[in-house]
Length: 391
Ligand code: SF4
View (cartoon, rainbow, N blue to C red):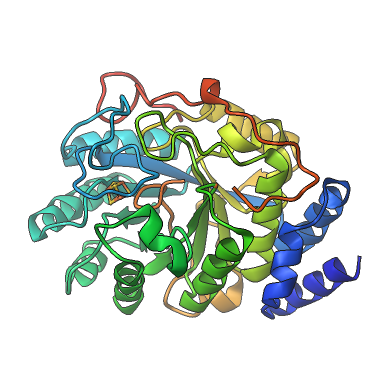
């Protein structure tokens, strides 16, 4: 297919595709799906080989958020039966992080619900970063605490944070449809603050919220413009008790097309499959490893993922390898660029919160998506509980 040859050539040259080309990827038929995966897989292997970076989420503070992000189980008014707790103590967070690192993760993502941190919260997180780094010198730490005020990114950087995650989630045109308590511009501003403080910026999207193909392309092009080092791609988990509970719009094939489009638009960036991997990709998860070079190990913020052991087996069975702590994630030109570079001392991240996790003007060839509420399990183990974490 001429389209795919063109996109591979552009991806290898780090050239931006046209919007029409990105839209055409989303519109490909199921008959062409494996060709799309193979083409985007060439770009993935060119920049990242067969390495898969593992990231581990620690939910420092769960639920009770005053913001109204409609996709989020922690939002104002959510009746989802999630764990609710206030700040974990540094040693508790460090303990949870240790489980993920023992499981093979090289990055820990410290996430807290809320509009944004107070200065006291930044102190708490700084103490937590220290507690983790005292035990694990080489770990990458990403903070995901919501909207940042002036000076907070610098303080987190000084405390040892390598990266900051704040997702754009969806297009600027539709942002007001999913959240009313803050704006798209607020989110862009926080990504800029992270960049300016020398933190590796991590910013991504949520597919499956009822957006059009054009919105997905808009947000991915906006991300390319922002130039984060990592782009987490969430697939909406339609939690019962949230406004988007009925939005079961994604098929595994659709998810693969979205990941391929993101890879073609952001060829040399760490593309991470985030929330909703098991729920929406299901048995096609291994194919997604040909597109993304990064996943979360184990559980998510408020929902359970497949067993960490199953993640590792999937990676090995698909012919990929877990990226080691001594390996640099990003291609040399990005790792050397300073604003971030996984494996360097300024890394990237991606957390499913403050961006949670799609319709999609989906390809006509895909079968309609069926609700799979049986696959959504509220997290009942790990951080905030007495049970061992999944790692
Ligand atoms: S995404 Fe973040 S800011 Fe929005 S409701 Fe959830 S926890 Fe609050």
